[in-house]
Image 1 (cartoon, rainbow, N blue to C red):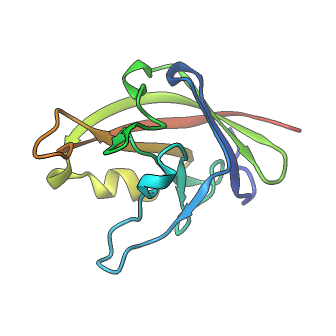
Image 2: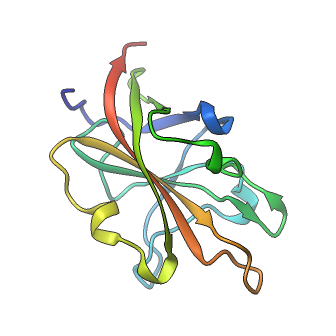
Length: 157
């Protein structure tokens, strides 16, 4: 699949998890160099790491959402229903929809986050969907769940 031109994400759908999120938040870096996450008040929204590529461009576009917060279940509460072969679609500001197919899912301890695998350069358009996981420990989830997907189609508006 040929890469798409840069265009900001405006809507993310993950049918297997019942997700239809819009608008998309722009997430940058915190003062300590870690990636921002949506606020608790925005737990029903997905954010896009705006220091990287947009979904459909060559490289890994990274989307981040909460599994849950102190207020209860959040936008990615059903991420466990996502499996290899499922589709994730990203509607873009230019009206196109980038269609990604899930290739891999990974649950890792936050202290062993695979930064290079998630954010490192790729030769093709890819998508990462990142959320928290694992059993609660002292009010926090110790793991990250990462969904890796490849661009398989682009649809015009």
